[in-house]
Length: 212
View (cartoon, rainbow, N blue to C red):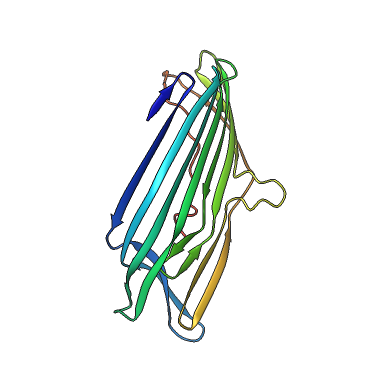
């Protein structure tokens, strides 16, 4: 880690071993039906590096960007050793956050999260990304707060909040593009009778973590 006058930076390398990693897998039931389950797919090994940079060019503006890249390898057996798993590939993530404290009572924030395509025990999950924008205004000595949120921002043909799930094996191939809601606009008005220092937090999406 290194601190500077207008920001800081950190960098690390790591390795991780996961025993009995859980993955989504399929097996053929008959000509028209696939069994889809989540199960222990074997052991996984990760080797990667993470870096992050926080920078504040002016007092009211703060910018953060962080990235993580690692190689994921999964080895194991499925369905009573009928299927051998040996999948490997590089995965990277990117997270950015831009905060602007325009005045003591008005602030805004932009966030972007990106996850690259990654290998699974029987296929691949596509890239996935989410941009969000929020504005916050307080009144009456911070007792009343108005927050406007633009979640899952999409411009034109941007594939925001979408992910393609592909699995394949002996005698089967399946792919589905999961498309979730985009351009969600939320307006919230709250009043606090007891003063609180807690900051509002953007809701996180479980999409990408749960298939259904």
